[in-house]
Image (cartoon, rainbow, N blue to C red; front, side, top):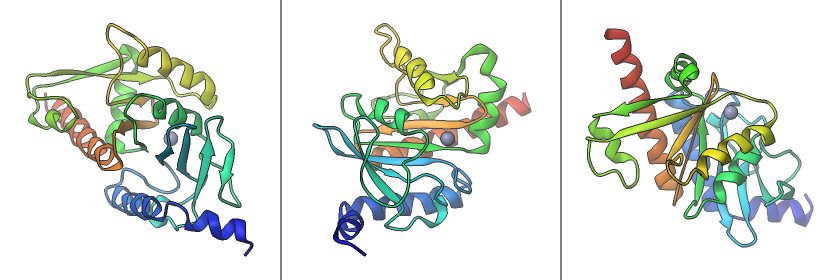
Length: 216
Ligand SMILES: [Zn+2]
């Protein structure tokens, strides 16, 4: 192994360990099965650099070497051999929001089903649940939280452009997270801990909304 490869495995080891633990947990919870999902941590704000899961890795069994570091243009500047996640552009977009320390993306059953059912409306409300308070800044269950659903697109640049329009909407911006139709959830947080909590809270709420709808 050459020194460059050794360096790539050694850097940000704590983040690698935390993301591997999250992958194992999310896989157990069926939110990140197979090689689906991708996770990143902002390791430098200026210039922007992300430690990101490499493409095609089993999220239940992430190794220390299953990550790359990308720059603000998505170029791999550390980690070999391998490509960054196909969805790097979305991670970079969300990492540019103020106060983003980590971005997590999952493919759960309930998120996928809801993103299908409510796609014609472009989203849906989650309302009245105590667990909404697990989303940063929400103080009461008396909250009407809108979840955007964007059409799925293998052209990540085009998808990122649509998401950016909603993030930049001054009067009613997308916050906390969003769904991609028939695909999955993106959320972010000031820290990896906060982003992990947002996944947990959203997945709980998605299950509530879906089950409630089935029982109505
Ligand atoms: Zn995905």
